[in-house]
Length: 162
Image 1: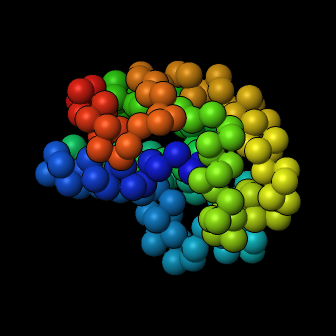
Image 2: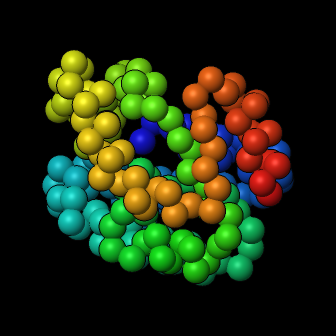
């Protein structure tokens, strides 16, 4: 969350002239409801089940595309196994918790998992989540340390991998 997956994904897809899919946007379109509203009205368990369903659907596509996942996607169900089976090009955009907190503070109202977190507690919340999710994130085929990279430098790092 807050690592720039969607922004970089779009830019990378444009650079490579292939399509881009943001999983959260895809879910919202298919469910005809925003992700925050799904969390609020149907709960996280419902969301995670739909997330896995739509992830499978997307991973079965034949054409090449860039897929931006939600921060929790690899950590639930068998999602990471599905990702690893479908591609050898999974990338973890790694930031320190302090940087993520700075990036996310303005986006809190749009992020269901952090919308109710006090600003002063946000970095600790992120640190805890990264600790819990690290074993999944570290299964990515590539890990890019993003701190201090510009958007252009980030894209260049990813293009080297592709």
